[in-house]
Length: 174
Image 1 (cartoon, rainbow, N blue to C red):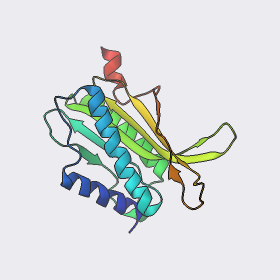
Image 2: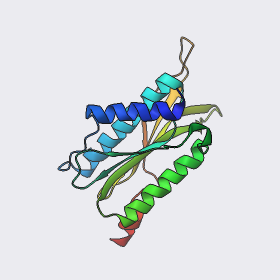
Image 3: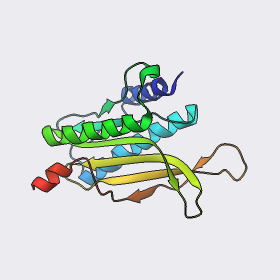
């Protein structure tokens, strides 16, 4: 099964199981945390099964009980490179946030790499999660070398306040 199809299958299973419900009465921070958890959990499952994950996004609209999945739905051999797809998803979410007042929260996840202070390249999961009435957050879950050898293991999540969120146009208009 290819990476794109595997990611969509995992997400469809979570949606069908009802594990991605948003809670409309929750605070913006609680919604952000729930979306971030759903993004990271699903991405980790895909990485565990295939070694990577193709970028995808989740969004929640006011009045809805469940989040909506945004992912690549075309033929795998015609999929754009993952960095281009991640940028296109981010731009789509920002455009929707600017034009759709019912879009309350959204997040996207992709594979990423960072350089350590020692110059080592560290792979991991990168996610941007934002809420119309909250503050955006970037999460990075590094995959660390396994001391016993073999596959890398997830480290501790690193949180960061990004320079740009998904709802910036609305924040500036306030």
